[in-house]
Image (tube, rainbow, N blue to C red; front, side, top):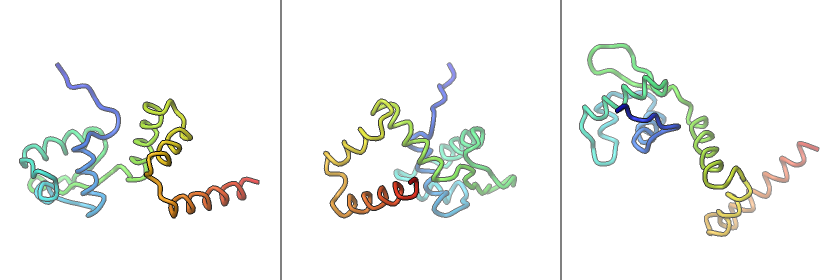
Length: 127
């Protein structure tokens, strides 16, 4: 039975993308050395093949010691993941997410001040 395609990145794919976003281009071994638990090279190679098929990464078309680079922009991935969280867990309400972050203490007073400043600037720009 074929594996169901996941929308967005799996946890391991996100780890691989984080490595590629950080260093730009890397071989399987470069990536493997930076992953938690140091998975087998064949595992990393298989994941990279799947990710290439999905258009997330590209390789340099060499036969041996391929180098991979991200095709997916980090901010695009963040936007997509955040939108899925908001849609799935907060019924599409960004406000509910923000209230939850504030209520849980995930936003300290300095961060809250910066957010308020950005909101004021955004409001002033739209007027």
